[in-house]
Image 1 (tube, one colour):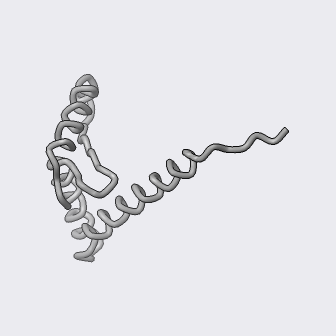
Image 2 (cartoon, rainbow, N blue to C red):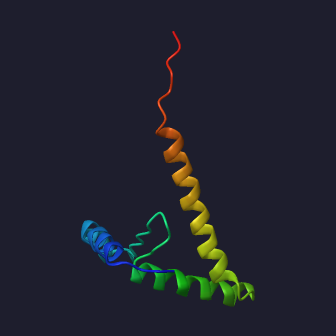
Length: 92
């Protein structure tokens, strides 16, 4: 997937926001735009996760499946936002 600087800026803001929890937990910011670009560290993290899933399942396509699932989630979320943007008529 393609990465843009704007996503890296968004990821940096998320990291700054959650600096207090980093001592107790591992925090990985993932910034995704509607058309698919992901920040560099988020893309690397998801790729590593996909490889680990492939190792466990034995299916080399796990990384592709992971990115496809993420894409579907974004599409569903955008559909919900679009639906909620319509004005609902109030019945009297």
